Image (cartoon, rainbow, N blue to C red; front, side):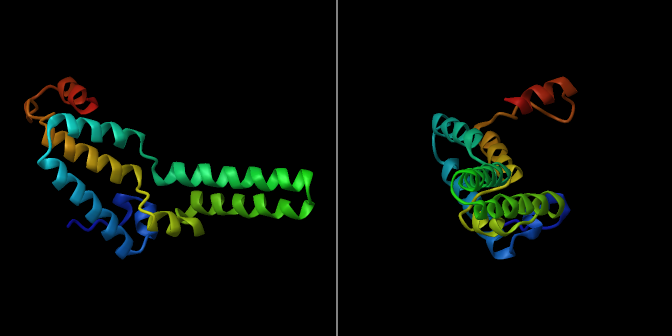
Length: 151
C-alpha cells in the first residue's frame, strides 16, 4: 500500500486522518486488483463510472449549498432564527477554501468520498491495465502522449 501525505497530494488528504486515507487507498487498490482479472469491457464500464463519481469538493459544495439554501428559505418563510444556518455553512466553506478543512470533511471522508486525484489514480491504473498506453514510449511525440492521456 502506498502512503501519500503532504501537499503533493492535496490539502484534503493532509487534513484527513492517516487511518482514513489508508482505508480509501486500500479500497482503491482492491478495486484495481479486482479489475486486473476482468474483461476489457468491464474495465471500460468501471472507467465510465469513475468519470461520474463525485469527488470531495463537489460533495462538499452541493451539500453546503443545499443546506444554506434550505436555511435561507426557512429564515425567509418561517423564522429569522434559521438565517444562522446559512451563516454557519458559509463559514465552513470559507474555512475549507482557506485551509482545506471543514467539519463535514471528516464525515465525508469516512463515507469514502475521494479527492479528484484519488479517483484519477484509479482511472489511470485501469487504463494501464487495459493497455491504453502500450503504444507510448519516452521517444513518442508530445502530441501522441497527450492524445493517449486524453483517452
